[in-house]
Amino acid sequence: MSKPSRKPNNPNFSSGPCTKHPEWSTDFLKEALLGRSHRSSDCKLKLFYLLENHRKLLGIPDDYKIAIVPASDTGAVEMAMWSMLGCRGVDVLAWESFSQDWAVDTMEHLKLENARVLDAPYGQLPDLSQVNWDHDVVFPWNGTTAGARIPNHDWIDENRAGLSICDATYAMFAYDMDWNKLDVTTWSWQKVLGGEAAHGMLVLSPRAVERLESYTPDRPLPKLFRMTKNGKLNEGLFKGVTINTPSMIAVEDCLSTLSWVKDIGGLPAMIARSRANLKAVENWVEQSDWASFLTEDKSIRSSTSICLKITDPWFESLSVSEQATCVKSILTTLDEENVGKDFNAYKTAPIGFRIWGGGTVETSDIEALLPWMDWAYADIKTQMQQEHTA
Image (spheres, one colour):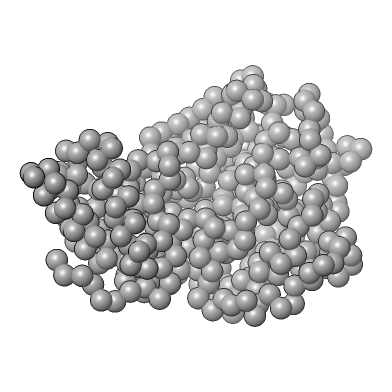
């Protein structure tokens, strides 16, 4: 096939850190409080403003607590698990790399009694009807490296005895959240907001706060995980007094993106943009004779981490090393052509591609990328076939 002529305006399709929104420029950072103490009143006001902007845009209830925490989404999930788990049974739902990490933490590091893992292969979900809501339940909203997500909130028991602990980093600002069903919710700025790395967000329901104040785990907690003082919630943490030093330039970057989200229509606009991105890929896959979704069930297919596999019989006949070489050649070619960067599948996921479809990505850029994928695949396939017959 002939080489496409139209290129994406923005070739960045990484799943983290993700691309900046289309209006972003360094001018947005001019108001950053650089060289200032994060303990100063000016910086604390910025941090508090960031928390409250999240509350307004995401519709987080007034009685829920919001904090900025260290170590991105991973740090936020770990804080919750190590601080709250152990007083009752635990169910961990795992269907890809990062949720498997939470399972390993639970079973091998925390070594909790009455704990179990409900898992599923890449592209599928565990049987949600088997979840025991007398237990605490740890789950990702979106399987970040598999492109499979929970279908809705209906499976979460309104009258649950345990806590629902949700890793929502690939879902926030891309889906509506029923906050009444979520006790602990975590994410990071670097995903759907296209922010800078290292900062996590932690939202606690009143039930989660009650757990922190009524339960003391029988294990030492490092300073970065401590959310209480003398048996009471450390309220300062939820008003912008961070545990460790935040980057004020990253704070400014996040504030500027939240302002952009508000300007384009808030959460509904972000959801619509992400859905349009997934739809563009779905339209392409319907016509493709070589590519398909890793998550075949449309009802649980992610609109953010859009994971693809190659289903061409020729490709499937190759050895694993040859398949990896083929995909790497495609990615290298499109990187060099400046049409697609960093959209390889996660290192432990099945061989394929992962295109970021969050709201900061323009649908027109995804639409421009896809014909280049067709061209690169056809070209690499021809080369490899010729090498095999030489």
